[in-house]
Image 1 (tube, chains in turn blue, orange):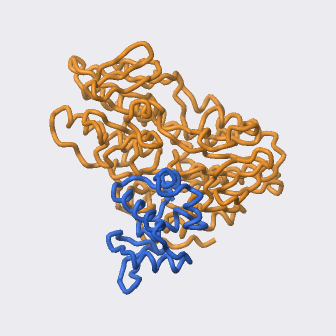
Image 2 (cartoon, chains in turn orange, red):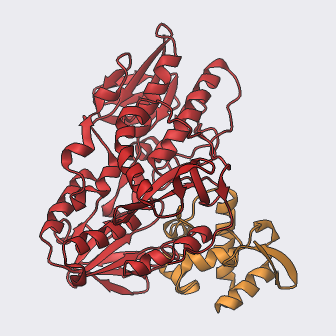
Image 3 (tube, one colour):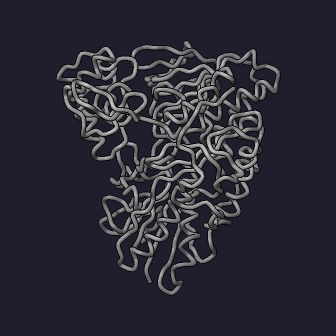
Length: 103
Length: 416
């Protein structure tokens, strides 16, 4: 675990840069992480990010399929918003844990 | 008389019948188990069947043999659960329950991906998560002449999440032994960020893919299979060609959950992570692959869950609060080929670690490191499964919750 200064705030992050504590998240932090990845956030991005955060708080598993069925975006639009790693990057920007397998 | 009904006589259901029958008075509780199928499969064996390591006989037995004699076994299809009426409708009869245990597992749903069940299905496209699929793949591999082999995961969650990786490792060994490894290109295709997604594992095990010359395609979410060009295609039109596609289709819970309004969009039943009580109904409990808990869908997890659930059923009957005990504990062997295997031990919150298992300092099994001992452990496990695990006999020195004794949390890369 490491501490990183993102958008002027000291936050705890994992080795691969995901927030350890999702309550430390803010819109500014999201924008900063997105910038590092090369994504400029729009309102549509934030709709997806808020959806991901709500699902995580409700302890529901996140899949690309479930985001596609959310009514916010379909899967192609999700790819367009977060190219090259829709779930990987959207979860990083949303300040929630990285989707993992058991190893 | 009161009635406890178990739906599903697979690993979890069979274990629950064996745990509960000796604990519930025969003159107070009837126990009934329902499963439409006669055969109980040793599902971990489906990984070995394609490579002629196991034969058909080693992976199946008659299910009833493992059910206690004072448990009624009904071999019928389950039509619907009526939770408000505490009833289960079967083909031609309706059962009333006081307590219901859902142990209906999960299975592949290839129809969820366009083109998967097209003309190439069972010709050049195979699964190995079913007995039939695994057997058909064995027959294909016996005289396959080589080409591009893709080992592919459609989406998470899947049963035994490490099995696809094990398949890729075993395929490498298999083709080398046949003297045709140079004719086969193996690529591992995953919707996740890599073959290893947890920092401890990617640190310790990153060398494996390279050593075995297995290529990686990550962050690939399949949209359809192109049967004409023999390619899998993702949502941004990225195409990966194959000669032989070994795929793990979407996994779903049983359709009974959909018919009964009890499941989520993949038919998994919302379940309390620590007590295993269903979220919607206090007299319905859920175990094994049928739950939506974020633990691995694996036999070892079901085994640890069964111990907690048996206690919680007794507490529920007695009117006591349930134990919030289950921690997501999983303990899995991972075959890496060349008669070696890894062993991993983890739970909801702790990543796989180094160390010895089950005894601190002694082992004899090593965690997160390849060894021949671990491979023997995996092969010995088939005997343990049929003779101990299904019968609900505790495996000595392996506790339901994860133990932190003898574990090393500072993971360093393997030197090769």
